[in-house]
Length: 451
Image (cartoon, rainbow, N blue to C red; front, side, top):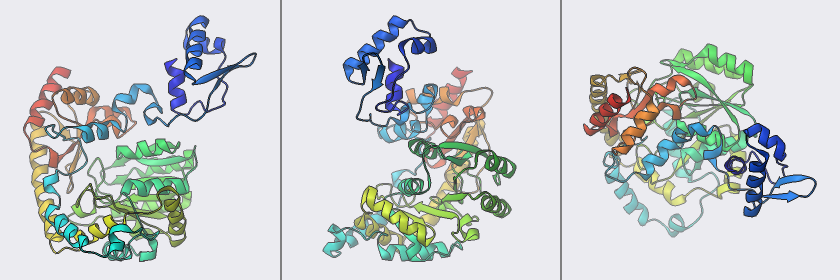
């Protein structure tokens, strides 16, 4: 009964679909016919299915709410792509969160935010109460165009559309370009929410190994031939979770392969302000021909201020604006105004300089403490907050994360970032959230008990 209910929740069984016959279901699941009959009758009593005399059992409508947790193997549920987010977002303030993906609140641009809020509070009533235009606040889009030009990306304000967040930006692109059943390439490992979002769009994610210099080009070319993917989603600049940076040679060759394979690339640039020296941007080399550039400022200004952006070809932006109106009507004019005020505040540049230096110190301490208990970085990043680490021996990151959670520490197990068996021995650490020695004491105990 639980299996059928789960398949209805995951939309594997749709309204009106005929269920396997009682005998076929009994054979498939290894149960007796009487057990399956009893399960079907209970589901019928709940209203989940209905019996048609002489025909069988059918799924009832309306469609059950989509349960992302039910899509995919149940064995992965404990550490699926939503596991880390749920644990970190629901954690009480006293919990330690070295596995989360954001800076501590005290590291963010609090003073600048307060100044921005005071300034916008004095703005005209339209800013405080009216809808934004379909593309979003013109002044912020002009600012973003100048900012991208500094990275070599040529985009007019008309090629930029504001969104509620970087995640919504990717969601809109997926709605625009994908159909259920399509294939999308992602890095292996990659940001875990890419997997969750693609799962929601009912598409197949295929991982391509990410090396210390960028994509494994031989594997990328093989995946293009084998799967004919529609889209590739990756990070620009600092890679999540590895902290690696794509080389210029890797970027050029990747774009050549994408051109030959008719592939569209989504470049997520959410960590731009953490770089000491800007890495190559695919959108700069490509001229926004087949690369869509997205970003937000939730990691540097405020996670509570939801505002992201999409930069793409003008004809694609026009269609994406229609989708944004259809699904969300508009972006927040108030949030856009506050963000613009914060970003153009005289203190933001100095604030980020201080954050980069502070992160570098935290990274050095984190790596030293990890190595002292036998946890080895896959790469020591040049910038950013993340370090991707291999656990000693045959330690299971999933079991280690469960043990640490029992002691009030939220970890990020590798299986949430990758479908590869090798990832089960990795954890991602956030150096900014790892300055408390208790993190390493708890981790050391979990490793000892897990051996």
